[in-house]
Length: 461
Image (cartoon, rainbow, N blue to C red; front, top):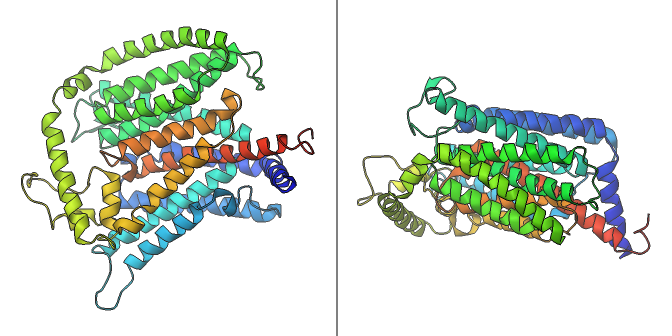
């Protein structure tokens, strides 16, 4: 118990006390980067992957210089996050093996260039996850990051509606696809819907947390003008909900609902009077969202009645991808090689008049490109993060907010990936990584704080 308390005290000191200026600056740089990364078509081009890799490397350099100057250890150490570093390292090593010449054949990957780009993207996500994890261990900074992230997501939603209503353009240029649907600065409406679903989860979780704070006198956080915070969160939620409906993405809306159900399950008030008051206020918010949905939801409702053909085509695609996996079940065809590899099995009744560059199921994509062993590493990492988040100790709604948001975002990404490829779009993935990392950092902080409180020798210090 003493050893556990010592680790908890060390974590709290690392979270609270050193380099506040450098980490605050780094936090703002992270926010600026996240704000800009969706603008160039969701960063879904090799040029943007290279640029973002360079920017994340600069962030890593800034962090490294600040860390070396401090003379202290890392706030979150590798051993604090269990199997994650090992699984991530194994994934990177396997991607590297796929592009190295092997005896008897040039490469394990059918598309070594694409695999090299996947390795670059993977390293970018890993470094960014590590940076946000270190920055977010401070609870005040974590909440500030989430507040500003919600403002950025809401601004993107409002921009998307403005572009839809003023000529249905993409930053002033004519769109070539998904006319009549809100796509924001993305090409694909489904990927944009996942991006907005993260915002819906964040706004909904913050709305419930601020509402509980406004209704409770025992919340340890001193929040100025709590009802103003409730109103702002409700506005953000309404804007994001209205925009995600305007995307006309059926599964995007469904994934957002899954994420919000997870948030609701984690945010039920424990005080009876708070429950009643929360239901009353929540009813008003639902009415507001319903009004916004009515204004934007005609196209979505229409698409809900015409699903048979699209799902039949999707099932044909999945059957052929499973056939592709069976050809190389253990080695895969190489990271990023799906478009090239799928040509080996592509046949009617699946349409042959178009190029299938995505499996529309990220799990099947991983298994076809990396095999049944390495292809399960990313789901394993996400399950590990989900387990660590779910085991985080309780507390006030505001204390739990980053963890609750991360669980909701994880539910959104995991569910939408069953039928689409949103997490293969870099801007979506970077936001996914940032929100998960912020929540995981606070889960670690809550765990170490609670372990110290449970120790009679240190709990009163």
